[in-house]
Amino acid sequence: MEHRIKKLEQILKNDRFAVYNDIRLVSIGIGEAIAEMPVSEKHLNGVNVVQGGALFTLADFAFAAASNSHGRIAVASNASISFFKGISAGKLTAIARELNSGKTLSHYSVDIIDENENKIAYFTGTAFRKGEY
Amino acid sequence: MEHRIKKLEQILKNDRFAVYNDIRLVSIGIGEAIAEMPVSEKHLNGVNVVQGGALFTLADFAFAAASNSHGRIAVASNASISFFKGISAGKLTAIARELNSGKTLSHYSVDIIDENENKIAYFTGTAFRKGEY
Amino acid sequence: MEHRIKKLEQILKNDRFAVYNDIRLVSIGIGEAIAEMPVSEKHLNGVNVVQGGALFTLADFAFAAASNSHGRIAVASNASISFFKGISAGKLTAIARELNSGKTLSHYSVDIIDENENKIAYFTGTAFRKGEY
Amino acid sequence: MEHRIKKLEQILKNDRFAVYNDIRLVSIGIGEAIAEMPVSEKHLNGVNVVQGGALFTLADFAFAAASNSHGRIAVASNASISFFKGISAGKLTAIARELNSGKTLSHYSVDIIDENENKIAYFTGTAFRKGEY
Image 1 (cartoon, chains in turn green, blue, orange, purple):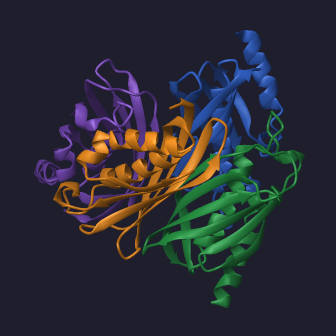
Image 2: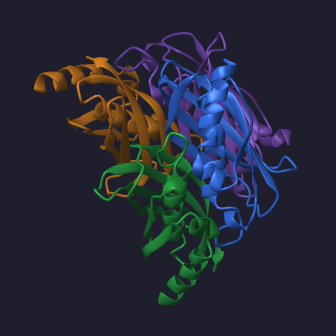
Image 3: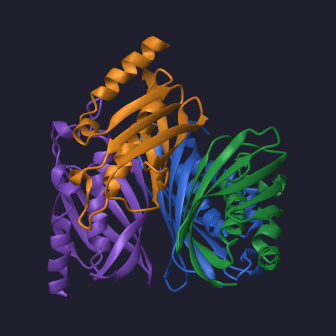
């Protein structure tokens, strides 16, 4: 088990898009994960709030960590996101939880909150499980 | 009209998250827009395909361009994406079209295709219209 | 307040599609609601499990109750549903909770569970608020 | 091939939830299907427009027809719907098209239109393919 989580952490460290955009893993467990992103100017869109794609990427990274935590490679098939509140600074945290874990498909929710626990966005994702990693 | 599109192009050029991730506007019209992203190593995830967040950001940028094309600031309220095919290189194009344009809410679809017109992902988004820009 | 909930209960009782399909309100509070549907043959699809539309309708009804609980007419703009498990009999319960309540848009999740608290489906919905009822 | 479509038509005729709610198949082809629903009082919600669940069920039925057209049982894993316009009478038509057809997962869009070709709602769905029927 611990061996597998180590292997998964290596895969996640190799996520160059997450690294390039200052997203990092905080913790990971079976069916759950937490990631964070300190907001800086590079995350902002044309009207000076964090771009929807940056919020999605943060949530998607936590979702990837959680959905891959069972020892099998899981790839996203679908995801939905609702945006609640524009934000321009501070640290954002994404908390992924397992909604359901089937044989082949599994489903997750991710809350994105700011440092004052304001809800910024809500993400749901479905992953398709392949072979072991 | 042309004046407005110029103003919108300025807003989109100021999207630092898109710029930082090599996404650029190709064209824009009323209710439609095309954006592109040449894939490079920075867009890859831990298993060496373009990260879902990079695909989402490309689609979201085209959606933002199309949904703001009516002269009013439009902010995303919801978006969904389905991932069809992993890809590791080449240029990706996002084509946004208007599904419906209401007084306050408007809805868009975005196809992401590769250079051989393979479908890579499909995005739908809802925008909420605010005041004029 | 109590007056408003009474008025809302009248509106919900007038939902002929819910009534016709044996869906009924169990309880309602500010930002939350519970509905139930005893499964019978009329809810089944061609492969003998409850049709996705029946599950959606149950969730949508609980979502409508919760999203209208603030004294203003709220109409659905978007909804997503994930299906976890086919089911053919028993009573299904939908539990709607408020994810976020904005000035104009509000967001809800709905869990559908069976009598053994197995998760059957998960729904999220966005509502657009209009005038008072 | 024709044999398979016949078998699928039998499965769809056995969809008791669709039948009970006056939804019927108009046509079916490989990766596509059309269904219709003449609106009557039983489809209305508490504010006298067609209930979201009725629209979803119509779309879901067309999606089921299209996604099962390849000779394998396909079950819905996720679906999203956007509602464009309330409607109270007339005949609604759902047109399902294949967005992508993978080995195990396939993706569809469904347009719901009224008799004047006004867009009423837009649905996307993902199906998971099992064994042959």
